[in-house]
Length: 113
Image 1 (cartoon, rainbow, N blue to C red):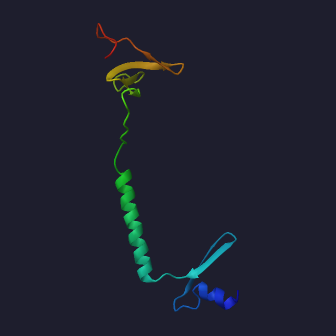
Image 2: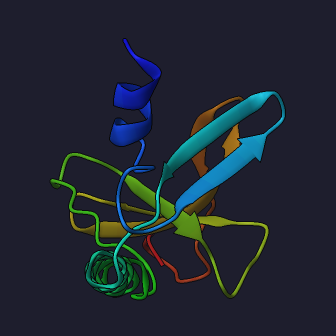
Image 3: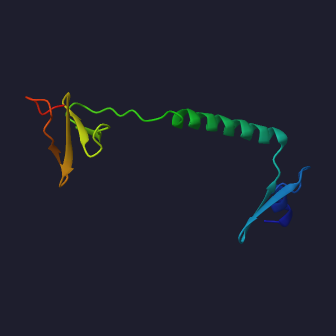
C-alpha cells in the first residue's frame, strides 16, 4: 500500500490534525475527532454512566428462592448464630462440619424462635 494511501486513511490528508498516542513500544496515529463526534461520544458515555448508576445505585439485591431452598443469614441479636429460613419456618443454629445444627430455643415447646 502506498504511503499516501496510509496517510489518507489515518487522517493526514484531512483538514484537521492527527493525534498520536504512544504507550510503550506501540504508537497509534489517527485523525482528530470532529467536535460533533466528541459531543456525541460524550452524550453516549453519560447515558451509559446514568444507566450503570441506576443499576448499581440501589443497595442490596433481590434474590428469589423457592420454599425448598434454605436461606441463611446472620442473627443480628446473636452474632455467633445463623438464622435459617426454610419451608416457611425460621430457626437459629450454627454450622458444624458443613451441616446446619439447630440451637434449642429459649421458648418452651418449640425449637423455632
